[in-house]
Image 1 (tube, rainbow, N blue to C red):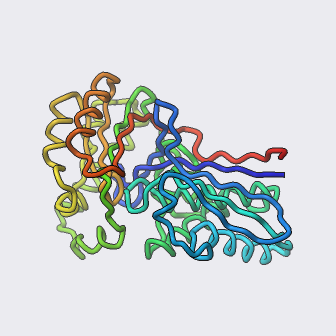
Image 2: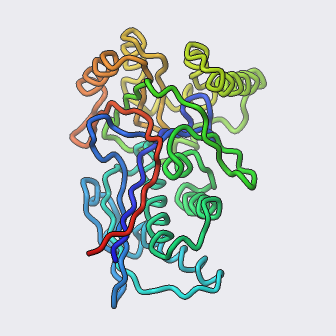
Length: 317
C-alpha cells in the first residue's frame, strides 16, 4: 500500500496578520504549487526526492526535512505505545526554499499527513497540527503556524494558538484572485526577522490591532471593500521591502491596475496581489513576470484560495 499526500503553498501574514494569518494557494492553471510526499512499507529504510527544486535540498538524505519528519513522527508514535514500521519515503519538491511560499511548511505538512494516514490516523487534527508547528519551529527557529495551518487546513486561517482550537478558518471571498510572484531570489526567515526592529511603536501596535480586527469583522460581514482596505502591513513590510528589488514599482503597477491589495508573502521575496477581477490578475501577473522575476528560478501564478488544504490518500500499487 502506497500513501501520498500533497500540501499547497501558502501566504504567511497576508499583510494584516503578522505571524497569525495565513492563506493556502491553488493556481487556476492546475499547476502543482506545493510539495508531495509518498510513504510505503519497505524492508529497508529509504529517503529519496525529485522535483523542480530538489537540487536545492541537502545531498545527505538524513538531513532532508522529510527524514526529520519521519523520525519525529515515529518518536511520537512510540509515545502512544505503537510500534513504528520500516518505511520508504519520497519527496517531490515543487517549492523553492526561502521563497516566502511556505516551502518548509509544505514539506512538513505533506510528510506528517502522509505518515498519519499511512498509520490509519493515530493522531487527530489538533495533535497533528501541533506536531507540524513544532517541526516548523525547528527549521525557522520559533514555533509559528501561519504556513503549516493553511497548508494543512486550507483556506484563510487565523491562529489562536490556544487549545482546543490552535487555528480557525475564516470566511473568504471566493471570487478573489491572488497573484503570487517569486523573484527567484532567496530570503531566509531568520534574515527577514533580523531586519525587523525589536520593539514596535505604540501607534503601529494600535494600527495593527485595529486593522486585523476590522479585517476579520469584514470577512464575517461580507464587506469586500472594508476587508480590502485593511490589507496593509505596518509591522514587517516597511523594513523587509528593502530586501526585495522592484517592490515599490511592482506595488504601484498592481494598485494602478485593479489590485485590491499588494504585499509580501511571508518573509519574501514572493509578493502577492489580491484582486476581484481575472483580467486584472492576468495583467498584473504578466507585468510581474517581465519586471519582478530576477532569474530562471522565478515564476508567477494566478491563484485562488485552496479551500481543501492538504490531501492524503492510500493507493494500491
